[in-house]
Amino acid sequence: MAAHTARDITTLIALISGGVALLSPWLMRLVADAGLAPLELVPAVAIVAFGCVLSVAYLANVHLVFAAGRSLGLPVITPLSLPIRLGCAYVVGRQNLVLLVAGFPATYAVLALGTAGLRRYLHAARWSETTLLVPAGIRLALCVLGGVLPTSGTVALARIAMATLASLGTLRLGRRVLSQTP
Image 1: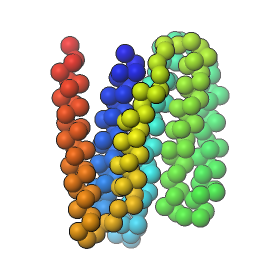
Image 2: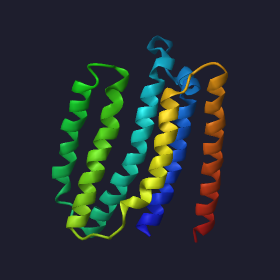
Image 3: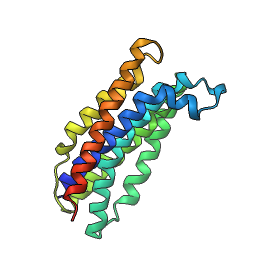
């Protein structure tokens, strides 16, 4: 059950975050201050969108740890993510301000791995994170394309076409999930 739910939620988040990454040139024009050079932030949006899906793996495991009633390991795992985030900011962010956001997915990767290990150690409910590989591949492809595709010209229309496909996938998945709910 946990694997099935995590896969559906991860796919949903992959499609939505991928859509945001693909549409970021237009979204950033709407929400970012013009002084920030919105189009230059498009790769940063793609990196943050990539991190959103990693949060699902973390949340799936941390909820199972809480359900087991043995969350004592979390005060060790959670603070470990801070040096990772700070390290990314120091090493990567000093070179490129856009890449400063790399700490977000790095933090969730550490949290996901740590809570998965804790869940296994506690013998909490079993599930295989490998069920997240296909949604992770979708997320990776959409977010990479959202970060590297041109932001103007005819080629930029490919962003809209792929975001439309992601939206249709989101609606289809949502319909399927809602039809299974009692």
